[in-house]
Length: 211
Image (cartoon, rainbow, N blue to C red):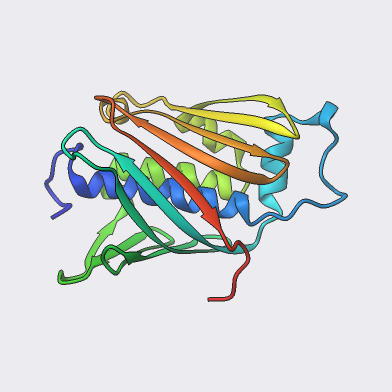
């Protein structure tokens, strides 16, 4: 159950992973064009401006998790959908079918063999913070993003790194940082480092696919 579970619970971890996968999908689905900013103008503001142009996106993802309690990496995969302004969906296919759906202030989640769970985001501040930070990135709202994270962009348009460090002390008890690597509006890889040393690596493919 999500309700009443500690902040480091498996379900909270899954919600964090959900947020990062959708962020990856939206970035990866943005096709480079002549409207992209020149290298000299590439900064966090211009990256967010590019994100704001994405009204819908879809992709496949593969997530590899390296956890201290397992001898082998955990691998999962599935599909992602984003529709502006507030609909986000992740449907897992392997190893177990399931879904996470965020629409407005509500989150629904289900794994095969379990009942659907629902929660109202504002009743769970850490999860709400994750979802709002994700939404602010998808919508290009840099002000809101900076309310939740210390965001720093390095490199140039052809090879950049965006690092997000949570500002909330409670979130820092289980997530240290998320680092995204890309070029232009294409993301190649995202790494999530959790408190305690566990980490995950996310890649996406088939961006813009029809579901």
